Length: 287
Image (cartoon, rainbow, N blue to C red):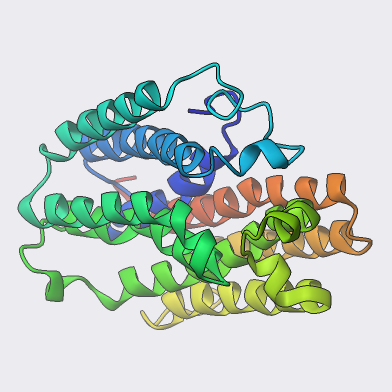
């Protein structure tokens, strides 16, 4: 479940909270904040379990993953599947306290989580699927907070946040994949790091810029300018500085620095979230 490595929790949680706090204009319903926070923790854990199950015959050939519980034999395949099922059931119980549309969207989230590990066998850009899976909490949060009854009622803002998350996820997970590129080539696993090749840093940079542009557009589309949404844009400014720092870490493609750049994305997501919260706090006297 990798609770000892919370980076995955952050990368699922921050975008979900972008959606929740934005939909709620800074003041989400307390029970929804609890449900989505716990749900992100549980579903990230479930994702780790099903990922390790799918990769159990591959992980033994990769230095970074050869000692994981399933591939090393410390946990059986049956135990792993039982754990995955249990985590998903608890997460589903939580979502039952929302509304019908959110429940239906949670079924899609489960499908995305189950399929992702297998995309690495057939899709050259599995990171795009990861971006959808990690960001699916965004439309769910909008559906729950706004109590929407139909898929078509989801606002364009929710989809813009999701698009931003997909671009961001491809960027940060390419950094992660750069660590395993040589091993993945040997065992036949596909990744964006392999697909991008020598253009990996350039494409990561383009994706980071695309992420910032979409997040910028979220606010300007609502009629806000630099002055009226200074906190939000400041959050994006901090995120952009962090992305520049990540580019610096990636310059020599050293494995330990690529991994450090990947971990740094936790602060990118948090910076955007803090910008959203401070923005609505500044314009809503009730906060």
